[in-house]
Amino acid sequence: MSATRVAVVKFPGTLDHESAARAVAAVGGEAVPTHHADTALPEGTNAVVLPGGFSYGDHLRPGAIASRTPIMGAVKRHAAAGGKVLGICNGFQVLCESGLLPGVLRPNASLSFICRQGDLEVADSGTPWTGGRLAGEVLSMPYKHHDGAWFGDPGGSRVVLRYRGENPNGSIDRIAGISNLGGNVMGLMPHPEEASDPLLGSIDGRVLFAALLI
Amino acid sequence: MTLVVVTVMPKRGVLDPQGQAVRGALEHMGFGEVTDVRVGKRIELEIRGHDPTGQASRMCDELLANALIEDYTVEEPG
Image (cartoon, rainbow over all chains, first blue to last red; front, side, top):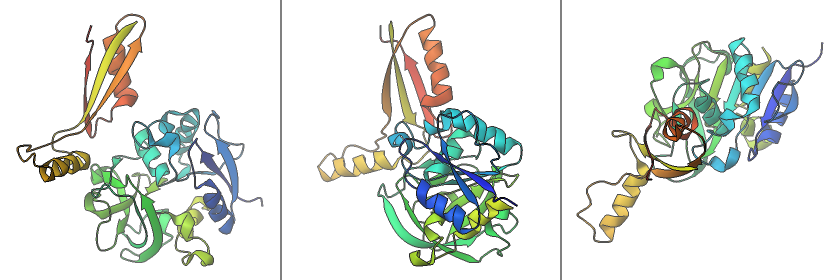
């Protein structure tokens, strides 16, 4: 059987596509580089990753311009058909701006760029994204962002991950990552792709990439 | 060609950390009379064709503003 094909979308200013592709490979998937101007996902795409970075220089609002690119029409059709989509950091911002996830990512309350390793708590064990971990279990991964404060009505989504302890950015209810009600679209500010290799000190992030393959 | 000016502001009640930072700086500089600051953005559009204001409003709804956290106004300064 051939490997599950995961489209890794690159916008101008995306930075973390190579790390995301390595994480896809680490769980046994095949990462397929995908261009923002394409109107369709690559042939045989099973799942989509929108990696982190600063698409379009964060101009206007983070993720706003990327969310209006041609490839996002294809990503929306993929999601509407029940296909999995994982948005990381700027990819999370793109998902919110595109309407695939509710809410919006606002500037950190501190107005500072934060970059550190942190602990996340599983808030909802019922989505595929945390691989059967129970509520309260901890995943360690880094986060690095300036606009990470999720704002919106949590009732319109499933809260999958929360920051453990102090809230680093002022997000509502310490939210670090949410999925849509259907559970097939997931966005988070922390970086699971930077916690997918033992050399990086944690492989806790692999569980989110493994979810793309099921 | 018609000049249309769009002003996008953080909604009242939504925390505006940029405005708070500016207010704090002004206070340290001795401008204690400032009780609140909100920072928004001004977007100037040169639009051809009819109904430039209506077109600009549609642009705000579809891209220029995020209705969850921002309000906008559209003017033709003429």
